[in-house]
Length: 598
Image (cartoon, rainbow, N blue to C red; front, side):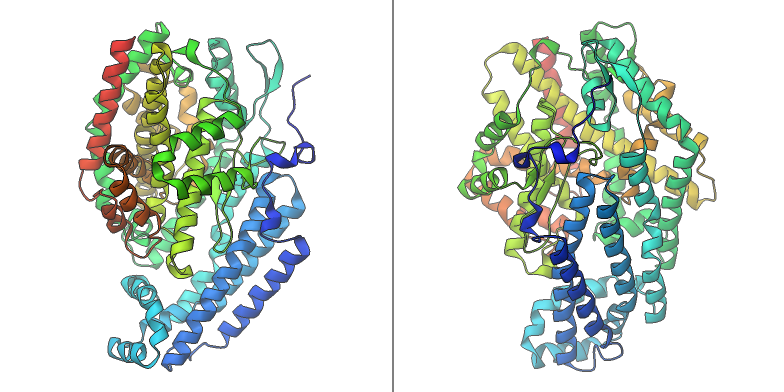
């Protein structure tokens, strides 16, 4: 019999998140949803009157802020419930119900921005004088004005808002398929035990020292996806088509420009990343050659990419040990940061272990006015410890911004979302390297550091190039069939890993299982964020308190400034190639050291 996962009801409470901190129970959530609809009804009555007076504009924005403060925790609660067991249809229904309600509300109040945009600047300035409390919303209004060329008349905005729920279908369908409906096959692990492959176990299987285990897990994973590749290609094509629809509707020349402009980032930053990484692929090839040599294989395959090349140093890291180590490693960030970490660790912010039906992967999510939550699928590995540090970085970034900023300015842009999380990872790595005296363990950690670069800078840039290419192909009228997507992905994989890697035919289907391809040009920000984090972490360790102070100003900034400007406060300018190149130079340095050790 295969070893099956625990059912949700069988997981110890201490290892689950406490959603009662959001709502006592589902009836309390339902009451909150009713309040949301009542606030929306008040807002709806402002149509045609938003800018009639300073008081009307102020009242509209106050109610809009109130709507957000109520809606965020309601989504948080429903989606956390759904993610902890995606097979629970009642919780899925809650999430879908709220999405439907919010799509309807968005349509009904879509007149607000167009009415604000019609207001003359001279009149607006008078309103700031007549109602001084409006000043609190000046930056919010300026952000609406920044996007004026891409706003439409009120009726068209209402129509666009009505399409939101429909536009979410590709992502929602992929998520349900990938997390709930897809059943991966069984296999025999390195101990001779029959287990079922799961998303959570797959990485562990690829880390196995037994090459047969790695190859079997790899082949069975992609054989499964091959059965559904046409369906998944159709879903991905649907995702790209809805992005194309919105880009055209909002008068953007491309889906890429629509995506980055939303975060007030230039497409040059995206292209700069691709250009700089592609100019440094020789470093990746050098890493691949070292991996091939140390694994002592005639051919290096894609299923050999994750197994540690210093295998004897691998050990289990229980969850309790991981928490303790992280607290020590992040001590340079100050007492207030450590106190917040301890609060999260000790008060059930985290859903720790994998269970049947639980969403795969890991994330942090937070609503204004409530503490953040972290989803983990912890498996006692070094990777899991780093993931825990990573997700708590997100959570504390959320906490600092929510605490320091009013609601409208609290939501930091996606562009900077990966900086705090990765800074935690870099500080953890530097701590571990500093505190090991064993040459083999040091080599193991250096390899893990290289793997972080490989996975976050090189791999995510490859993903970003896949998104850019496939979106451009669709915009040029090409069909995104499974074969087309396989060909594009395989070519990129071959180029990024280089001549010493066998890009197995199965890897061509990796695109089919990547949820981030449904997040609208999200992945490039992992690479830019990692590069920024390397610079920030090194400054913290070098300078101490002054660098920490600058960093916390960044963490507390929310979206009060553009993301590129916020990063400049922390000492990083991503409008230049320098941070990307500097990070890749660190990769080169670590590679140098590992080569001397082995």
